[in-house]
Image (cartoon, rainbow over all chains, first blue to last red; front, side, top):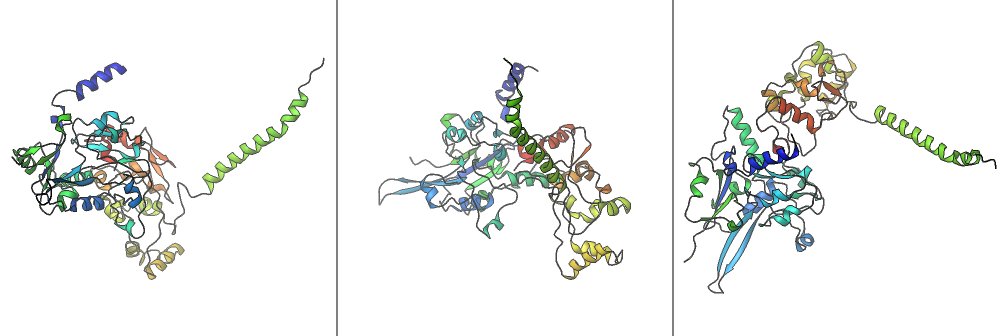
Length: 252
Length: 190
């Protein structure tokens, strides 16, 4: 097959409208900002689940922190009428992801579950994806991070400890999705049912502001949530077609 | 005028000697590396023979490696598993005595891992065993080995000794058997 016809095949496949509707799953998260209290439990849970290093004060000051999910804080108005609002931002798993088009080695790509994935050992650390990401959710390992003993004992064996020079980001806890699929296979089912997969942030959210699931089934909890009239997506005008929906009542 | 190349050859002699010495060193080093350094078939604390157990006595793999069908890791049997039989069988042999000393001291046997995948690889024995992949497909003819030797599967499907696993070998098998999402990176990477 010639290079040109291969290119055209790829073009027809990936540029066809509705290509993303053919996914096996369409993992989606809905975040109810009216419920979010900004407690940052999701950040802690993510840190623990995904072996995210603590970079230390000095590196943090240089903007080299690693937080797959971060809670941004916004003040509205002046004291004493100040109003505080929070928005947790993680990788939005865009269906038209800018980061995927730029990676020179295809270390980041869209898989058949509608996830924007990152293959760590393929990454060569050009950091182009972080530049292209409008949400600023990709984090770079500037150093090999170490866990002092006995902290290395709590590392999650299902997640790689990323080395120096590797880009990383939220995976929607893909290791849990994989495990749920494994259990589904054991039960002789092909599909994972609603509520079987919960990323660490969703599991830990005390106010149940975060909902996660497969958008393909319209009866799933997340499908109901994203049909809420309060829904919006961050930077939707960029047509990234992201998979994280935010629910927020707009003050008139 | 009579021009001879002999003087320049004489000048080259030390260089030629150096090249020969370096080449000899490389050959010797390669041989020493293959012969002496722990490599594809490291010495184990007890000279356990898979040939005797799995070959001659035809004990099924999963009699000892019980976790293979249940979990990602196949699991090395506990000392009590060995002792379960060897309280009665071949108790006078020196290797069994050594085993019993571990048992008496209540210590685990420090087996050396031979088939080790990198940390960024997700491999689960369970899915492969339940899909009825023979153990020998990946581990080679274990029932003929006295000491376990690192083995992988060559492109033509035959066992390839002394060769670590490579991504292409996993992929070719996944392609042949049309595994669902078998070529997606996150099926095997983590």
